[in-house]
Amino acid sequence: MRAFVGLGANLGDLQATLRQALAEIAALPDTRLVAASRLYRSAPVQALGPDFVNAVVAIETALEPMPLLRALQRIEAAHGRERPYRNAPRTLDLDLLFYGDRVIDEPGLRVPHPRLHERAFVLVPLLELAPELVHPVLGPLAPWRARVAGQAIAALPRAEAD
Image (cartoon, rainbow, N blue to C red):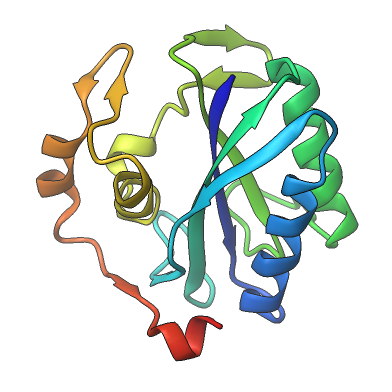
């Protein structure tokens, strides 16, 4: 199954954490990394704290959605992720954005991610990887980019991102 995962961090060594998390996602059982977006710097949305560095990865996985989510949460925990309150600054945030074209609404798991189309830090790197991506409820995602144009986001220069 093709899935997309959003990565973000705004505490610690942001780029090193994202690179390590990317390797850990690629090493999940029955999972293969297909592509990774560039790294992007963005201001927090509905949160306080320093700027984030974000990315999106595309994976092929045989893991079902809930086991995949649990694996992502274990990676977050290994990087010191704490959840003292909603939208708190974080060492690592991994969000399951899409799992094929499935719509899932279960306790603890909503896919597609319910706010991905409202946030430039998700939408911009996601569309970098899959410009023709179609949301199973909203339709094509590309037109939503104009709606988040006012949110500050910048691709990190390749030298800074390496």
